[in-house]
Length: 321
Image (cartoon, rainbow, N blue to C red; front, side):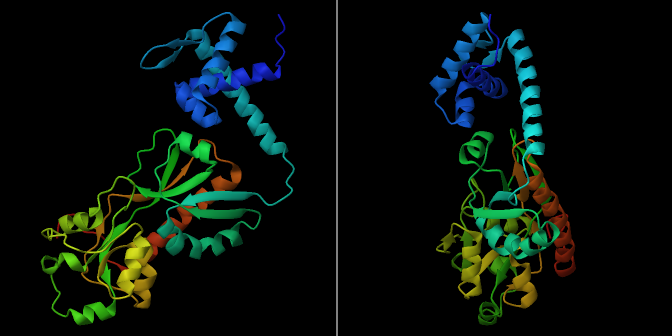
């Protein structure tokens, strides 16, 4: 029997590898950008060529047979060796460009002002950033061609590599003009619902009043009647409204620290509460060297920012204040 790696056989093996890793024809299809039926048919052709089954197909799962497990291990090691060799052999012509998907408000207020330092440290790497905040999984990253992402959320990624590089502190902020117009505001219990500016999608799946409710609970204050306080789909929009004197926004320290230092915004109360969400660098397993450097730089910048934040703001209390 001819066992040379013909184009057809290579295609069958690629589909089998994806199906074995995912335990699903559907998720394999999403990764390979073909239909579920095409993946199933390619694997079936491989099984017919080998003369033995590679999967047990049950209503609930796709289970590899012992032979299928053996082949899956050999293929994964082989494909990783090929990919590693190609990466090392590729002629270093143009500057590699790392493409990073990033939560928009964080990209505008925290990431882009620091990118000059990244380019100074890594002049041989280009970095392209585009803003979006949808939840990620492996199939979505592969299908969308997303190399890596920065997300502000609760974490819990199961099929991706995620590194938390910065936690977040919450504190209400307003313009000096708003505070001058409300000189009697001394206690969180005095807050009125129509003063509050909301990021209605702090992260995918968060409630419309998530951050305000979390902060008020953290300081032991009652929840107000939410009323007609404006809602925005980006934290930066709520902060822009606060800068314009329209009300009080729930500030994330990473997004408001520079405005606090400059006096454009002021803390309404001195109490910070640690957010339930944090910033994570999310990649597919084994990111390429350029993207790995981006991740290392984010960890360093996160540590540097945390030190600066601690010099300006009192840390969150361990217990309700």
